[in-house]
Image (cartoon, rainbow, N blue to C red; front, top):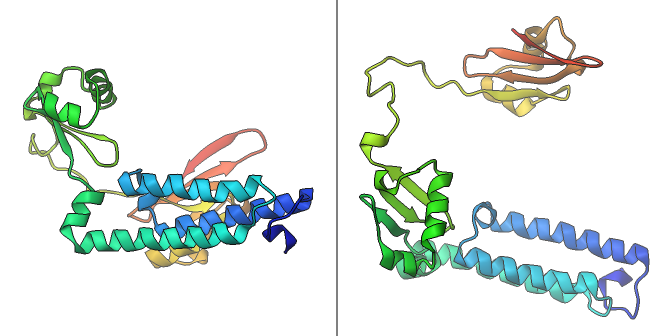
Length: 240
């Protein structure tokens, strides 16, 4: 465990071991913080990302620094992060500080220049974000807001929204979700348990194909299985 402490010099193996420990430790820390920390960098998430990256980077590049201090500091910061998130759910004032409300940028086709300045965005950037939402004319926008996560939410006026089957009073089929049940010849046993089936049922459904030859098989809400078979040089699809 000499690589764990500060040294005058480290061997190649010790550098590799230190990198492995740092990598695994960051994965554990990110897992502890949850999906929120990677789904979109908000104010608190941005601060945490900068801090953790700086703390763990130094001992991975400087042999005179040990890993112990970095690991203790990282655990402390992760604990503070989780505590701050929990408190923000309980105290409205903290919630507004860490997760400020969305800033309205466009209302009824008109730009709110004061809020645009408040969000520190340019008009060119606003139009670029609107183009990403396939909006070519700002006059069509009923409401657009800059979210705390750094994304633009856009809602068109009803006159420019796509027509749906409900608008035309048409009957529709129920939503049918497709999930992978075989990947690279391996069954997804968790999904089999979810739909109340077993491996025998699945092997029967994919016949006459063998499980090892199946690149991908999917099952939908109606328990219809679609199989993709791997051949030597081509991929052919078979629908069961």
